[in-house]
Image (tube, rainbow, N blue to C red):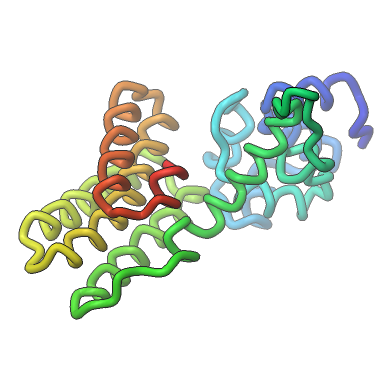
Length: 221
């Protein structure tokens, strides 16, 4: 497979990673079903992935596929050379940075690497956060329309618990979890082409992040 071909370079430049996956898969004479079975995806999930175009991708899924098809990670936006800047400090390799940031964000939700307020309600928040992470992992193998209903119910549960939280510390902790769940709901809506709902959920994610008093989460969202 020529990773320097015009087709591959153009697809990589525009973020059309599904096209690269399709080219690599057909080059290796694999069906969508065979690729999906090797990477923990359904045939329909592979088909949607290849047809996605220059849209958002789950970077953990890209990583699995790149390993199986032996696609250089940089071609799929998973890695790249050190960022270069202009004299004014403007980043001229912003796409590589965003790709790396997205890979980190999808592989490990941002709250997993920061300290949390520890009080008697922390086990509840931890359980809800674990559920959100599980839903994220299902994204690569489950149609968005089927997953969205469960995620919406999960988000409503978190928001309800926030309203009845016994302490401000508990409410703040749950706000961080709500922010993560809302951003996942936004991603699923975007994947289904419902951009209006996606913007609404992203707005809720930002609002909840601010309520969590977590500057890292707020910046991320």
